[in-house]
Image 1: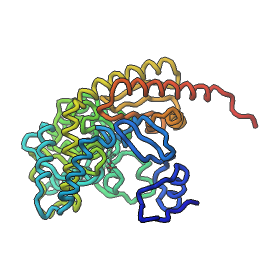
Image 2: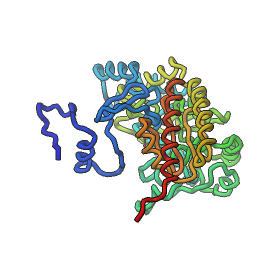
Image 3: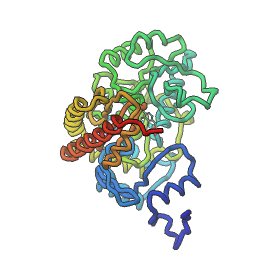
Image 4: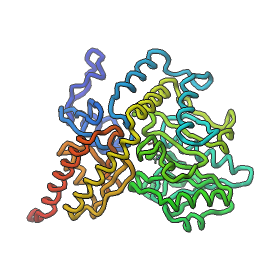
Length: 420
Ligand SMILES: *Cc1c(COP(=O)(O)O)cnc(C)c1O
């Protein structure tokens, strides 16, 4: 077994191949994930593995690297800021924080809004949950109502907010104060509201739950219900935010404004940063001592996010996501006519899924063999989350690879099972 000998202290100069790196993981890294290749380099929509193989990356770090891997503008901003000031704690001001907060508030449409910065999606959602709790506290209201099949993170509070048994199993007792309703079913939400309910938390487009967009009537209905019952409407924009759906934030497709929303994934193009963006009702609720995060909003993290936003603007990524999303969906729908196991194609912008009539992990492997990275969601869905500055020739190339992988899958499915 190959071991690191740390020759010359060159920890980062790995010359290991995929297999050796996998074995190294087996020994020292917890098996919370099940990857199969080791990636060593990326540029735009392309990545290379430890064996030198090139892939077209249509998952972008799970909707993270929105402007592509190692975008020169983001790399430059990180390099410059890393040489100037990395971290000072929130005991001191750093001007990158209000600069980024203003950029987000202006794009959110939440006039009078303010931001809190943290490091991940789960942490941003914890911030939303705490806002919900604090807001309802004096009236004895604390319950956060979330949707079944949602995904909000893996901390104890956010896995409880997540309406899926599979992420909760084994971690009971779960924190109190959560209730569930059915996504896109307003009657179910209304029925789940009690005199303890403080807030309704939902994704505008469910990501892990299956690339399922909210119906316009549902989002409008949630807003009306919240206004009627004096509840907060909180949106988890961790996956569908930052231009992914062709608008800055998913809720902007509906003409609805949440009272606050969370961001992370695409915010720093891979540099970890999360944010809570709150509208005027909640912008001044947290006071010193209520909430904090040591690493939240460092000069470096904010610099990465600012460069990401500037690049999304400069390269017209929102319009591109709409255009390329339409092209990709249209081409995948043609494949759906050709391959009987593809039931439908759905999505918004560049958040797209192909719905299969059977578990499709095998198709994920076949796509990888073709040189295309995508990922299975909810067993039956093949999910595509390309960078938002993807070009038409790359989309067409991806479609050819999907076509070839589907043909290989069809042949496998048609082949008689091995004898014996
Ligand atoms: C990924 C995701 C999260 C969790 O984000 P982490 O950074 O992994 O904690 C929360 N909500 C949604 C909608 C997500 O897609």
